[in-house]
Length: 401
Ligand SMILES: NC(=O)c1ccc[n+]([C@@H]2O[C@H](COP(=O)([O-])OP(=O)(O)OC[C@H]3O[C@@H](n4cnc5c(N)ncnc54)[C@H](OP(=O)(O)O)[C@@H]3O)[C@@H](O)[C@H]2O)c1
Image 1 (tube, rainbow, N blue to C red):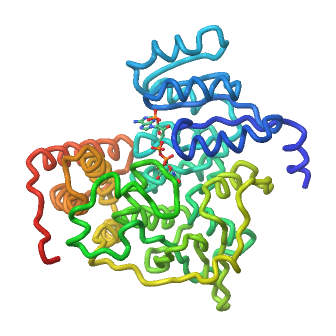
Image 2: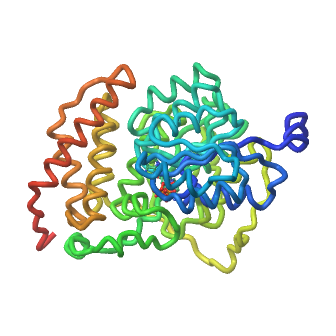
């Protein structure tokens, strides 16, 4: 109660890494609804100068950083006379993460978010983590840094946020298993032969969630659920044999926790990322969120089914990488980022994404990385190998699959 009152008296200082993306914009939408409760310290983007500058001015940020150094001059010009400090490149992103915000939203897509996220963790900030790739790529290192720095890590992914909510006040030894729900993506009912022909436009059109392009493609291949399995393993410290995946097409039950007394606790809500984001933004309080309310009578029925590992091999690859351990998840993540980029650019077919990830996993033999530098080397080598494979790729034929 004392903490909640303190939060109400002084604005919470916040930074948003990846402010121009889907999660970043939803975060700023919430912040903009009660601006008296927040003071925006730093915002970042990759290349989108116009959106970054507009957000920085609107939310009176103190600092804005653009990852692409070639856009520095444009950002500087856009913010000239505003009093907002500007920086670019890796150093600019690091500075954004290091500036003294109480709360940092980590929402840069992909392993590119790892450095800034670690920087915020190391200075013991409260870090709302959307970038699941950080935990897939370097989960052991990131969690060790959280433990040693005393940072508070708040899961933003709706499934992990649901589990986080269900676990509030529960003893670790009472947990039996976690059940991660999955929408099944836009191609849940399609044969592999039909999936071979899908276009990037179809793949990014998720039936329930409005998200960035990369995570939308990950949802379509179901690699997203594989990445989330690895994420859940690190966040909640459970072996993968105690984490199940359950397909739930309506995306209303966001995940569940089964306890040793036979009770199962789930978190439900509309598929709107502002709900889990708000849970982390207000933490430890709940704040008001202007989403349409859940009307179960109107929905009528909720359905569940087992995942199909044959039609969605990415799930099997992610589970195997987690079982193998060491740097296999780092390789999986890097290969997937390259494959999804190539698919979106029209250089790979949809089914080639998982095939390419499998080929890179086979080519980059498993190892162990004890330090962040070693992880980054493995990540770079897997990207190099994946790029090489994309250049010489001949699409696999899936005629009768
Ligand atoms: N969207 C969702 O509903 C959702 C749900 C759960 C988890 N997540 C996770 O949250 C993260 C963000 O997803 P999103 O959908 O918000 O992605 P998004 O819409 O593609 O936005 C990505 C953000 O990261 C920035 N960015 C991209 N590449 C970068 C780089 N190399 N260096 C620095 N910044 C870079 C982008 O800047 P520009 O705009 O300038 O390119 C943008 O601000 C992902 O890890 C995703 O898995 C998303």
